[in-house]
Amino acid sequence: MSARATKTPTTWDSLFFFTPEQKVVRFLVSSKETTYSLRVLVSKLKGVRGLGGIQGLEKTLEKLEESGIVSFIDNRRGVRIQDEHPTVAVSRRLWGMCEIEGLAQQLQSLSSKGILLGAQPGDIQLYVVTEQPDEVRKVVEQFPLGKLVSLKTHRREEFDALAKKDPKFHALATLGHLLWGSSW
Image 1 (tube, rainbow, N blue to C red):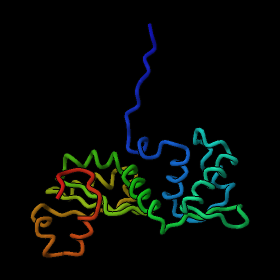
Image 2 (image 1 turned 180 degrees about the vertical axis):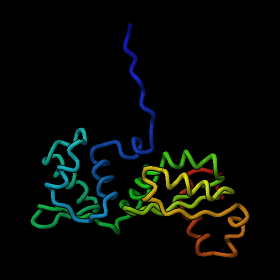
Image 3 (image 1 turned 90 degrees about the horizontal axis):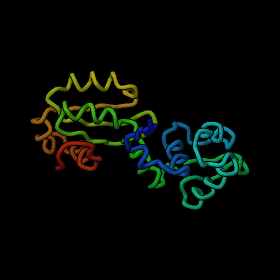
């Protein structure tokens, strides 16, 4: 008998946050804190394979500092994420997509469109076009990370009239990231 290795399914998280450096960025953009001591960071990231302990973390943070994503503080004993950096904004959206990947899969059968409007630590903004808004809300509430999701729903006819009735929200939805459904 031969042992058969089971292949783990590919997830958005495994695609977007694969390397130790990417996993450090993922942690930084997912946390509500903006400033970290190196000691705290190394303890939070001790499970990251290939990081290389405190020395590896410092090298990674130096690379991130060179790119402008973080800056060192307190005589290099701490680090601060640069929220205004475009990479941080994109990484937060990718993090948000990864956090709700399972939820997105559940909601596809209940809706015609799902759009990630934005993602900040503790608040993933999701817009869903559905004829079953109560069922969608129930699925979101039962999702393990559902408390992170700020949900807005519209029925199809409301969605079709959105450009005239609420042009500001329509613009936000147009700029959001389509997770499922047809594009505009």
